[in-house]
Amino acid sequence: MGILHLTRAVYQALRAHGQQTYPSECCGVLLGHSMQGSWKVEAAVPAGNTRTDSAHNRYQIAPAELVKIERDARRQGLLIAGFYHSHPDHPAQWSSTDLTEAHWLGCSYVITAVAQGQATVTNSFLLAGATEEDKRFEQETILVDGEQTNGLSS
Ligand SMILES: [Zn+2]
Image 1 (cartoon, rainbow, N blue to C red):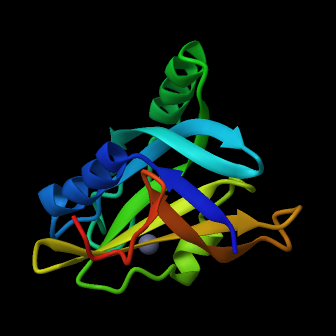
Image 2: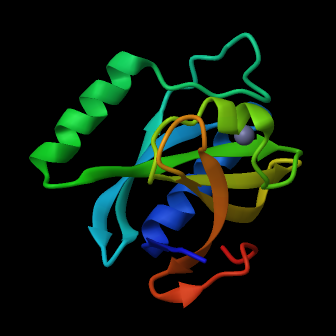
């Protein structure tokens, strides 16, 4: 199983974002660098959810916003390590829509379940595979400041 390294600040920020946007989904971008084959995330950038038609169970980051986030990241020597979003009143498991709409092979997709406004479990899934045709999600272990989390701590 792969490992995703988060700082406590990033972990808390992405969970708090899910609570703020509840009952809509939040979404954002994770920036960091690759360390021995796993991502070390240094920053979480909140993004606007453009799916106003179905914001409770869909998320989408505007392409122009993503281009700007990536440009700013590169200036700081960081790469796009992955994405995060929330599942209001649903488990922290990827949906078939999540897989269909995930295109960044080798990036981590972090999902936080938010139950009645409170962030509960946070999971991460690596988008594995070499092509769009054989892409798949593989669950990763999340380490927060080097410690394993059960997804319930805050
Ligand atoms: Zn989802």
